[in-house]
Image (tube, rainbow, N blue to C red; front, side):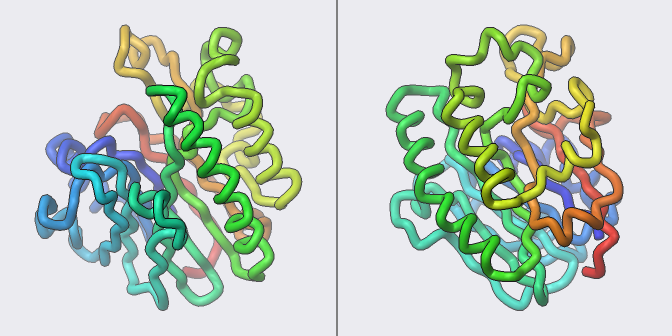
Length: 259
């Protein structure tokens, strides 16, 4: 089973850069995408249902903002759109597809980098999302949470960690919260489990400022965070960098799990 997660920073922009052509060659079972920056009426047929994939989306109310999606090679038994929390759902940040006992989720945590107000919104999201993560873990289902979590967990996960300790995405409170997700709830950071020492080759996002991408001044903020059962079947993880579809790179993980 191959699962891919990619923040597209605009699905229409990523399409013009060859994302869907690349996608058709990946033999993926489920592809989770974030930051659509579009509504259904903005999307072409290929974006809505590319080739053999079924597409499902949770759009933000605000035009040109946020939004998540999920492409699956077979139809899910159930789709859950949103968290039933009005202000979070208005931003289009969560969609879940259930296949038998497996749930695959595309999630996009807020960024707090633009203002203190947005940082507080991020903290609020984290606080209210944690009980949902607890419920997922307690459900007995296997769960794969894919997405842009907008948090670099440890020093190894970004190039300039010393100078970013007071910046959104590497704040002590954010990192501690993610540690709780792993250590208290028991979720697994698959990429880090498979590649415990990977540093620069594991980055998934680069600022558009300066020459961050050329110099590989990046952050690892895109994850596949999973329950231990399916996590134990993970075989390979790779960040795809041969082409650029957005300021993020797709994270591809193969599992020895029957889809």
